[in-house]
Image (cartoon, rainbow, N blue to C red; front, side, top):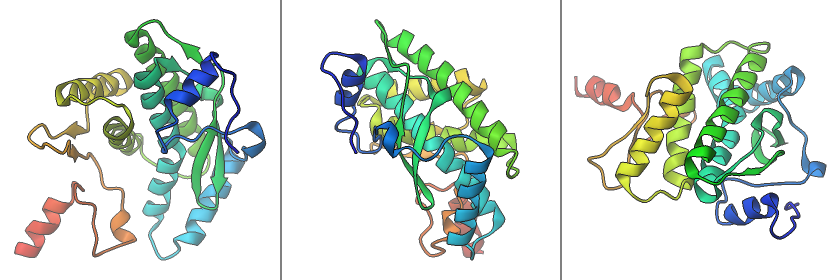
Length: 232
C-alpha cells in the first residue's frame, strides 16, 4: 500500500520527490513487519541461510548486512538531494518479503532551508542508524567493523549514482567524499572520473560470484585478481 499524504506537509513533499525513485518505497504502518531487533534480524538471517544454502556463511552475513542498510542509505541520499529533507532513521521500520527488505516507513520528517543543513542532518541520522543496525546484528552473527564500513561505502556510492539526481561528475565525487569522511573519517569507495558512465570503484566484493560464478560484477575489486590468475 502506498503511503497517503497531505499536500504541502513534509511527508507529502518527501513522497512527491521520491515518486520517480523506485529504489525508495514509502509505506504505511500496516505494511511494516521488520525492525532492527535481534529476533527479526535472526529470522532474516535464517531465511538467507535456507534460501542460499549452497553458498558460504560469509555470503549469508554479507548479504544480511547489505539488506539491513541499503534502504536507509538510499532514502538518506534521495531525500537529501531531491528535497532537502531528513528523517529519523534510528526509528526506521521496514517491510520484509522472504529474504528481501523493500519498503519503509519514516518518522520525524524535517524540511531544511539549505542543502548543507539537510546533508548534516542526514549524515547524523544515518550514522545513528548504521551503528544501531551493526550493534544489533552483532548479537546474531559476526561481521568485522572494517568490512561493514566498506560495504556501507559501496552502497552509498551506488545510491549517489542512482538516486541523488546529481548530474555533474565533480559534484557527485565531492558529495560522495564528504559523506564517507563524515561517517568514517576516510574514503573507501570512489567514482572513476576517467569514465563517462560514472563507474564505481568498489571497496569490497559482495560475494555475488557465489550465486553466479560465471557472471561476476563488472566493477568487482576482485576482477583484476581473477584476470591475473586466468592469464597465468
